[in-house]
Image (tube, rainbow, N blue to C red; front, side, top):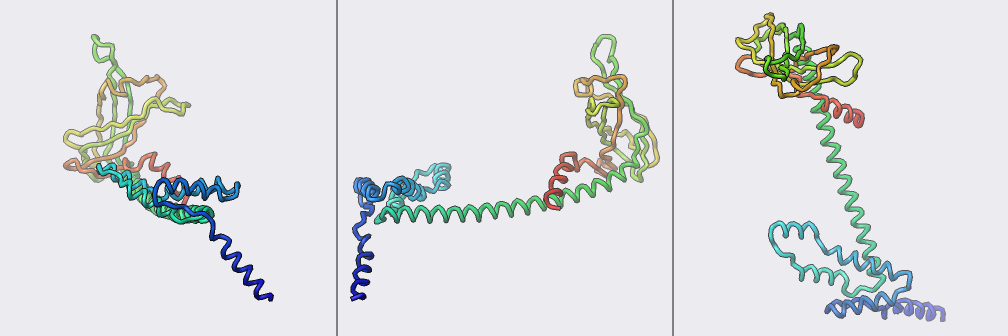
Length: 284
């Protein structure tokens, strides 16, 4: 007797869902009407979730990357295939099955996004570590070159602005430099960074680069004094030059025979130093 009761309950449970309405995608009309019937068959608290699930499953069949690629290539979108794929994802599904499928799809997408995010983070980390190592190498070379460049000495430097002639009110900037080549190389061109700054002020009046091609070169242990006239329409000509301003010059690069670069500190900038500090704080 007990066995019969259990069997009856089992059959009732098995057959209880048999009459649930399902989505019929044979035509657009039947699809619309059957979706409405399936929705109405659900409890009120599930109907809004069903609507959202329908949209999720339908839009899951749209490959935006493929659409943009085809548009870029001038190819029309295959609307029939897209519609058929949407119908397949919904065909024969009950309301609860639609909701469950949408949940599973969201979980799957979340996992895929997590994998992509992890790969992006790993790729970014690898790139930044390589960048860090490259900057450390550049800084090491910068230090070595700076020490060697210190032998090419700027003994004195002045910056003035003078009237070009009595017929012009424009001021001609003049840079006076005395240098000594303490390196073991003959120098054909030297590159400098000039800074015009008043004592007690944190911001300079002017920071500009300039260079000078040395006629006949400058041999080891030779000294020279140059008077250079930068373009009066450049920043050199526009700057306000207070009487208390001090003009300092740093050697950034020297070229040797045939204009070939010998030593340079120009490849490691303040921007590089800032970036290096950021990466070292992050990974070391």
